[in-house]
Amino acid sequence: MTTPDIPFEPVRIGIVSISDRASTGVYEDKGLPALQEWLGRALKNPITFVARLIPDEQERISATLIELVDAGCSLVLTTGGTGPAKRDVTPEATLAVAHKEMPGFGEQMRQISLAFVPTAILSRQVAVIRDNSLIINLPGQPKAIAETLEGLKNADGTQKVNGIFAAVPYCVDLIGGPYLETNDEVCKAFRPKSAVRPAR
Image (cartoon, rainbow, N blue to C red; front, top):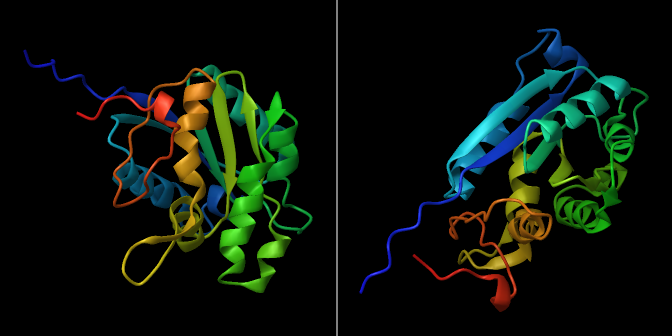
């Protein structure tokens, strides 16, 4: 007897680009397309994206994150506004809406970025849980977004340093979200054996 093909669970993902200049049309936003492209390659699940392009205003950022969580986004990724400049307030806005902080994500992102630039220590990205949603601040540059999500690979394609997304599906499991399934050639999700569903 064959088991019926179980469809991949749909997921709603919030993506937020935070930039004064991009939000006012001074230059083209590259953060939202970069997030959408990478997630589309990395996940097998059908994704509904809820995208926002907003200025570097702390209250506006916090309100947007709450709106996306309330709209049923199991995962919310932000890009931009995490440096030491006066207008960089994304981490403060994110922590203000947190029910739990997840410091390991920020630590690992900085570790990955330090392999490329010494100024990675200036990054202040944080990750938090609010209700049943995981919110992660990512860097502002598309190249850095992919590097931190995907990690570093050796010349032969084997994983040298894990990207942060390897831990995202299991975290989403633990907070009651959908079962996220990844394309291993982009990013292999890690789960304890007891949490892995049978392969299709």
